[in-house]
Amino acid sequence: MNPIAEFVKKSRREAGLTQEEFAMRSGLGLRFVRDLEQGKTTVRMDKVNVALGMFGMEAAPARKENR
Image 1 (cartoon, rainbow, N blue to C red):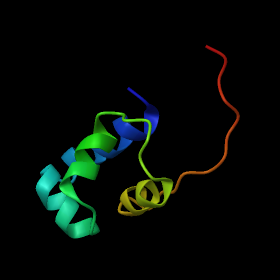
Image 2: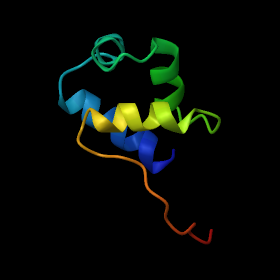
Image 3: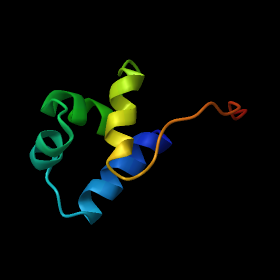
């Protein structure tokens, strides 16, 4: 799973929110939240930043790790 997906899922659970509650509070769709947490690679970055913003974070450019 990708680091953003792991972070959002872990943070949402720590906040005691279901995916449905998180979607409603963030203004995102439930399907998007599910796709994000499953690590779908085609999610929109503007929406990713809305989700991350719920936890005081945002996506930023970084060098890709060699794998």
